[in-house]
Image (cartoon, rainbow, N blue to C red):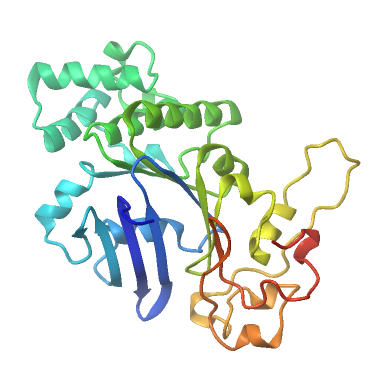
Length: 329
């Protein structure tokens, strides 16, 4: 990508000397939707918390995060305050813990308008109502006077989206926005994000464990494992030709929907390694059915395996059996 909206390069994060991110490279274009998937603890959320300067002070962060030619890592706080919410907004997994329980919904959305657009008084109140209407809150005028505990989980998540939209961001980072919501409300929230993206032209990063959701919502998918991006692929190609054995393993664990007789799901053996005890070479090696001796020699780099697809695997194209019963690209 020649001129992305945001480019993350060589991003590394460590806590007390323990590496959590080990050199993340990721780019997001204007108006693009990118999915970020992987098991818990692989570094999906930490990547964007680090990019926005939201990690605690003890975190050691190096690398580069460039937004429209402006470096964000190490940037002065006034610049970050303008970027956070104004250029890049983030919504989190649990809206109940993100909203202030002692303030009314209207006041919290209005605060975002005051900070990022300088609006106050009647103008802010009218815009708050418009935003709540836009995200599908019924009876928005009266709901402005409600407290978070008076709304359902899905409605609170819509309020969080309204707050994120208040600054008219160019990029929205949605971190597991449908966690703890029932499937019907999940579908509504995802449809809402797709609609807002189409209406506003903003870019979207969707962090999720659900490959199906990401494939339907996003243009491109980045798969993370143990603090690294190990595959980037278009959503259209994700299910047809996954290249990395880990991506193949994730897909093999999904139940088939084509009416075939019931069969056992293939599970990836073992668990994600602890950051303090990463294996040599490829971190996925101990769990990989295609592991070879060269996998332990060095950490594999992302290489092109097909147009629009990159993967970090030392034995791509080698004459070895496919992983987890899926054909290798």
